[in-house]
Length: 528
Image (cartoon, rainbow, N blue to C red; front, top):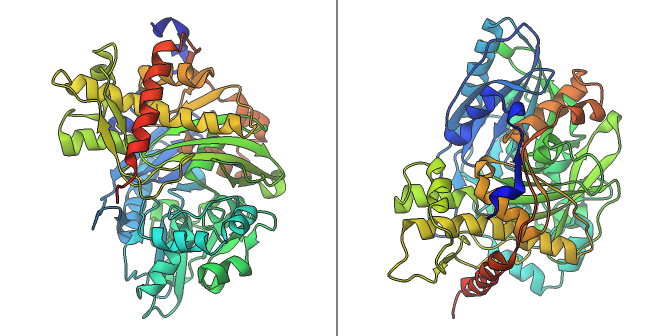
């Protein structure tokens, strides 16, 4: 029924896009020699490097999967050394190929999983504890205590955020309390971007310890107005600010890649850094206030450009820095909604339940039935994000009958991805944030069924980006802007295109399914 409301533009789909990594493939295409910008995308489930030419079409990519550690329910960790190793491997692999094809790498941009927190020794590079991933919920008691002590209003007003273990500040305090820096000669607390830049620019042999505004705004320690660390917030969370990286604009000269680490990139400048969701907003060319994107990655994230004024607190929605362009323009802010599990639910179906053999099987299986047969799925594996903000919530699968099978469960999972974003678009509307069009990206956005559902349940036109890897595209175009590859935002915006456009259809049946899903959300709360 929904198919007639979508229009395809296959002429804009390149061969490279079909090779892209939501299918876990790699490809390279030989072109006429040109200046190349690399994007290093250090994500939650893997690390990739993508090469872009001046047309913003990807011409080469390399990907490595990142190991996930789950030491106990609600705890999620990564090995910082593995993140660094995969970054070096993918950078070297792509750099070798583009140079062999006669291209010159002129700049490197970095994008990364944002709130994930690393404690390490800048003198040795050692980390006494795994990184605490953004999905990790171990600091829920500290956040609840801060709320009970009456600090929520101040934190919201200063940072745009809520007191939730999602953000980095309480993770930093936990690492300090558990001895992660007790033996460090030059102790450091940072997000993934600051760790990678320190490593790539020389590590203990002179590496630069920096961060930028979009990543810093996810720590609960950055004042949105001053764009600098807040002594009052540092004192409140118990985080010494001298352990943190220097905050710079997102478009800056952050340092040069060390030839000792990546010989093929010796002396290449790192000229742009953005947190992954802000990078996707940039990559989707959402440069004007009111433009909005939805990324369906490990989680689902809805960001709307809020202009150059720090956003005021709104129920169910957080405020954040979108980017600081430095000499290229004013600071831009964003409103954001976050769902912690999206693509991770597809991995769960594949790896834990064995209902699908590959992620690409989900869409066809879900479309093999007309509905979910009353099955509802809420993927609250690590709590619920926007607009619910329930860190103790846990996932539920409801409405099962003897007739429920693989296809019904698969359909319920796809519905859940759409419904989580619909809950955010509702919250945006309630907060008075007008949305006119949704630009979609991320691996799961390849499913036409999801795009049709999203358009109908959110009452918005949905346009799927020609490049599903908008995070890498955003990092590359920002870095290329600073390096002079692109003249300005207008030129970058002119290269954006979509491959699928969907308009809302009759919402009656989907509305009923969504209402049932909202009732299932109520069952995610732990019973005492």
